[in-house]
Image (cartoon, rainbow, N blue to C red; front, side):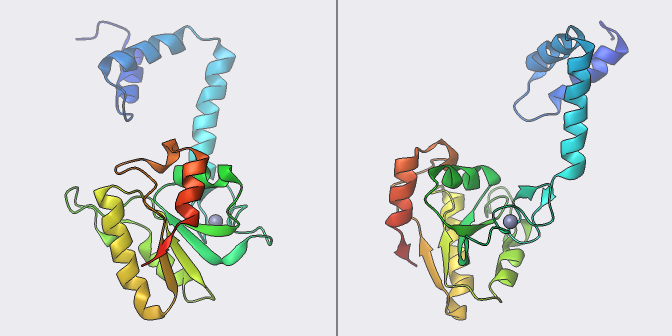
Length: 198
Ligand code: ZN
């Protein structure tokens, strides 16, 4: 039954497809938008479409960017021979905020999870291995200390070991199950400095 106009129903339906948005939140958002100034709504809609159209994976590190190569990878001051492997662009941002890491990154966009049916082929591992064909001194595995993060770290270490490239894992100063993005900078730096070879 359409209690509201079918266009509002459609809006509610679209919102409820988003992660973390239940039926009630979807309704609240839809009614909020109906009451917003038209110009603001147009800006919102345009920014959604623009972001979706222009943001892509960096051809080198796979983070999200609107350029072919992201600003970190194309910065000549960054040490291209040290690669920190993280799960998400948010983790990358957390380390960037510390301002103390001058290497580059590799973003996996997930972690291996047999429970959720996410295998090595579902994250950006192939892209990482391709990068290791170039001169690389160290790969720092900074996946989360969750079960998935640890599984992924072990897998990466096994893949890289035969290449002779140094593989290290950030220290477990990061609480178990902790999401990197919520951890303060001091803890992140301590974890990075206290990394151990795998
Ligand atoms: Zn990049």
